[in-house]
Length: 256
Ligand code: FBP
Image (tube, rainbow, N blue to C red; front, top):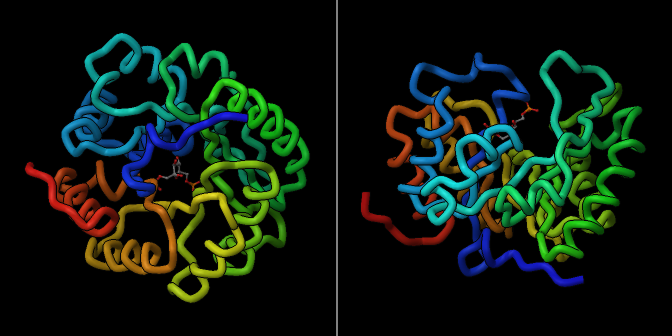
């Protein structure tokens, strides 16, 4: 099976902008500016990021056929749910690999709620997606989110388990929460084997320096980059945050 991560990485490293929160959390995450998908596509393009994560509706209406298509690679999120689904979550597939290809995707993403009572449904959907995407030459990113009754999603061992599940199921990249310290994150990276690990951004932090420190630690532990949404586009100056992230992840500056 042929697939390449080169369209969403630079020298094996990556910074991906996440913008699927409108579905996952609702417009409560947005203000008058960042509720407009064009503004986020503009940030990702100007900051020269490696990809933007969109659900198919936004991809179709704001990306396909627009100037952004040549400026920032698209990662189509193939499943999703609202915040009203909590205890034993399941995020159904809402877009096919075929549709993602037609939208111009360079990769596809899928969330697996590992440990949820409905995990088997997500495993089944993921396995079909993995096969179809790889047959079409597209890499697959797993959002490995341990969740459900009795699952502690902040436990470093549980996060490492999620990373291992991604490897076992054939993901090329796995997006996980930071464990809180570089030693336990290095074990997460080891557990993921040849599946590349990206650190998840999370809610906007009060002190952005703490966020940069976490990214530094994750990179030093072997992560290949980050998938960040709110900590970039909710920031006062998103391009400044993106520049700092580029310094950390790639070790270079961009001209703003
Ligand atoms: P953020 O950097 O804004 O946290 O985005 C990453 C992300 O995985 C999004 O892709 C997704 O919408 C959201 O977080 C899901 O967060 P959660 O399920 O923790 O509410």
